Length: 144
Image 1 (cartoon, helix red, strand yellow):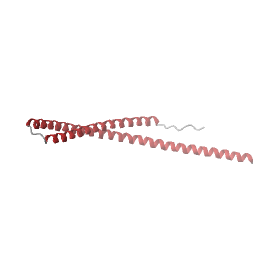
Image 2 (image 1 turned 90 degrees about the vertical axis):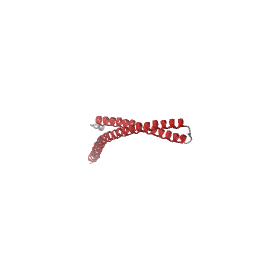
Image 3 (image 1 turned 180 degrees about the vertical axis):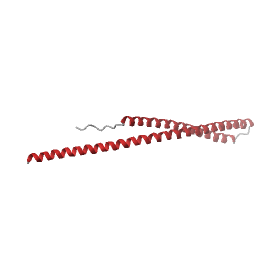
Image 4 (image 1 turned 45 degrees about the horizontal axis):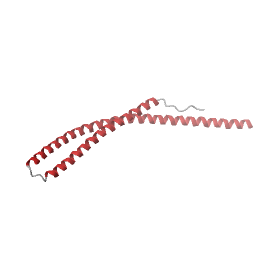
């Protein structure tokens, strides 16, 4: 019986797959931060709309002044979130680049494994065909 196929670089491939999984997780975390910031920006935008609608009905100076203060606070929060979003996008792009590089290395090893396994199977098939030919030939030689 032929021995099973063994890829000599399997440990390296396993490590690369582990690295790929880690990089995917890191990218997912970075994208989650972006999503959270975008959700906060959406919330602030909704607050702006609500404030604008409420301000239309204000006639009292104190209400208008308080609304303007609230508007400035929302504007400040929006600016902070936009800065955070820009940073988060940079982090996401870095994580994406790391993942792409790891995937290149992993794909190269996987293709090498597939080639070696295909060559192994061809060799095994050739050996089996030769063995069957030998059996067939030995049977015809015994009959003569």
